[in-house]
Image (cartoon, rainbow, N blue to C red; front, side, top):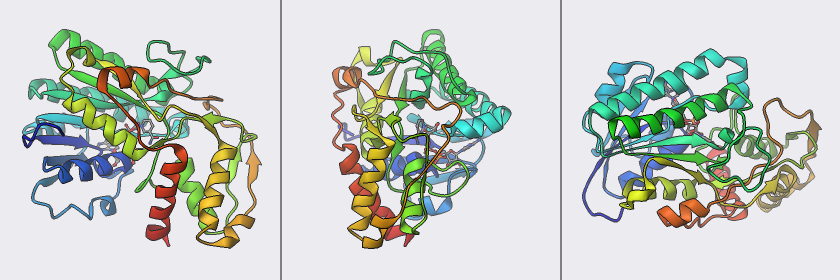
Length: 327
Ligand SMILES: NC(=O)c1ccc[n+]([C@@H]2O[C@H](COP(=O)([O-])OP(=O)(O)OC[C@H]3O[C@@H](n4cnc5c(N)ncnc54)[C@H](O)[C@@H]3O)[C@@H](O)[C@H]2O)c1
């Protein structure tokens, strides 16, 4: 952070993929970090590099419990709210739990943050909020109808944040993440994200299954670009940058076929047999949008965002991390 002051940052979901990367980053900058997590999808091994750091505090608790939220936010200057149940298919299979965590839990942490008078509340929003809108690139002000229960919950978060800004004067910034990937993203489980899942399968000579013909495209976003956005969101002093949402992406799109091509290329440099693993094509998945591409103009203009990692650059880093940590 640009200001040299030491702040205390509450990172909810700090044992998860994005939250643990944010925790590591802000600890390195010398801040105190409190992590609130119930380990439902996060892992203790994500905390191992800083669990003994005196500036780190773990609160094992649930955002569905308001008392846990009040306790966690007590000493916080800033909140980076990441805790949620991700995954469109999970929300289709179990909309009630997704809603409880992503909407009721969100409201709890928002209320606790308001009452503790935190300086700013930054939260993980989602590109799924663009729903069925077909225009590309996606600009923040033009959204469609949600295509899944998960997308509804993430949109409701934005509505609540806006109301809390207007009604109670809480400074909020929402970051609409687009397909984030990188170190520590979980490759396992029924709801694993495509990149870590495919990396692990290819490393084990198993065929990845692409849903559809592989021509669907995404704005794949490397974790370090997301970290930059979170840092900008809590440090910006630009008055017109608050109480709104930002696309958090690289600003380019690649197809699933491109993605697999790059993964095979980088992995086969480490193990030549991976070049021979076949790709299987399956059915399209319910709730998936065909194409996704972010305009990052608003983030550039109001926050000074300047993403450093393209898909290819991020994949090189991610593949090397998985190679060293999964083998
Ligand atoms: N990864 C992406 O591509 C992506 C894209 C758009 C939005 N997001 C959002 O970013 C945030 C972080 O996602 P991630 O990919 O790191 O997921 P993740 O599953 O790795 O992390 C979520 C963390 O929240 C914790 N958590 C879940 N329910 C909780 C509860 N009730 N109480 C306390 N903690 C709870 C989990 O244990 C986990 O550690 C989520 O809000 C997600 O919706 C992610």
